[in-house]
Length: 235
Image (cartoon, rainbow, N blue to C red; front, top):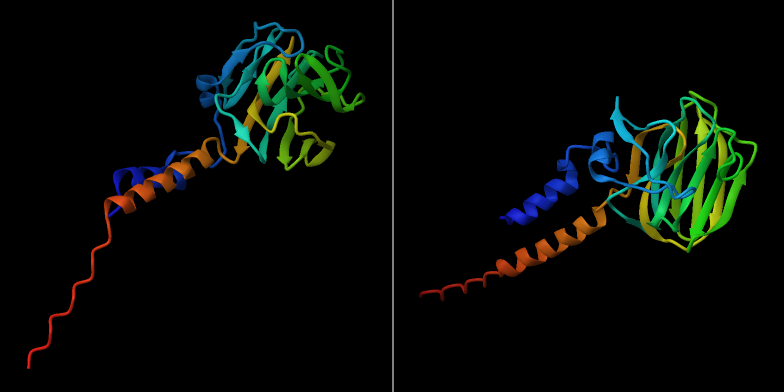
């Protein structure tokens, strides 16, 4: 018979949490993620809301929204982003340690608050290094972009696409931050983020470790019974 702890952990690992593996709803994000400064300006006046399943940043504000969990090693952070109008910057955060130590993707609609176009930045101790960029790629208002940021070993692969067509696909070798939180950022810009997934699911590896401990404890609690000796045969 399994202990209650083993039953509970098994339920969680096999989908008892009520959502698909890795998927994070807008309401979960608004309830648990932390509002922080803009990595570009240092301003923290952004306003975030959940609207029709999307995480929405109100216009003309700047800041970031950072996850309550950290991912380590290989991972994928994926979803969609869209800017309804204006021409400033929306973007993504990953490998986040703090506002001065992280990776970010910045996507401009024509403004040059970061750099023109789309850029991938490593900020280390407040100093920026541009890992990849396309100055000619600016977002178009009302266009839905799919994004995927993945680490595999030493490599980071960043992809932005629209309608199945890849617009930006770069792989860079960088291991400055091999673990950290993820999130969004805006600079004077309204933006909408949806279909957010992080794989492996946050906390998954920790839960598996707990399950292993629980199983070990279960074995210790129920030692093997000794086999009974057969009664001697009677003549």
